[in-house]
Amino acid sequence: MTDEQRDIRLASVAEEVLRRRADSLAHEAVEDETDDRMGILLFRLDEEWYAVKVADVREIYQEYTITPVPCVPAFILGVVNIRGEIISVTDIAALMRLGASAVEDGSPAIVIQNNECTTAMVVDEIGDITDVPADSIEPPLSVMDKAHAEYVAGSIYLGERLIGLVNVDRVLQPIDAEDR
Image (cartoon, rainbow, N blue to C red):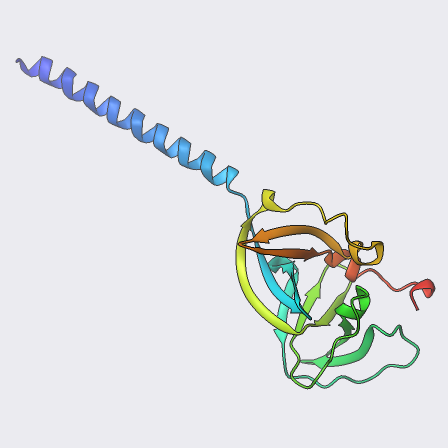
C-alpha cells in the first residue's frame, strides 16, 4: 500500500466517523425536542392529589400568621406578611368546592403567582416535585362537577394515582361581586 492509498483510506475512514457522529448528534437533538417535560409540585387536599406547574410556584411557606379580612369570600382566609409583602391566603379546597380545609398553625401554603396576582394556597400536605412529559396531560375528567372542573386544567397519571393539574390562572382570576 502506497502512502497515497493509505492517506485516501484514512480520509475515507475519518469521513465515515465524522458522518456517524453528526448523525448521532442530530438524532440526540431530535430526541431532546420531542422529550418536552414539565416540572410539577404535588400536593394533597383531603384524600385527593393535585399539582401545580413548578413555573407557577414562587415558594412554599409554612410559618405564617393569617390576619382575617372582612367582607371577602369565604375561601379567602385573610392575608399574610411575607418579607414585607402582603399576600392573600386562599383555601383552595373551599374555592374548588371540595369543602373547607382544616387550616391549622403550620399548614403548608404554596405561594403561586402569574403576571397579575399572587396568593398563598393552603393545602393539607406538600408532595414531591416531579417531571412529567408535557404531552401526558389529559383533559380533565368529564365526571367532575362543573364547579370543580373549572379549576382543573388537566389530569396526569403518576403510577396508579390520578393527579389533577390546577388551573393557576383561574385560581388567580380577580374576584367578581358574583363570587362573594
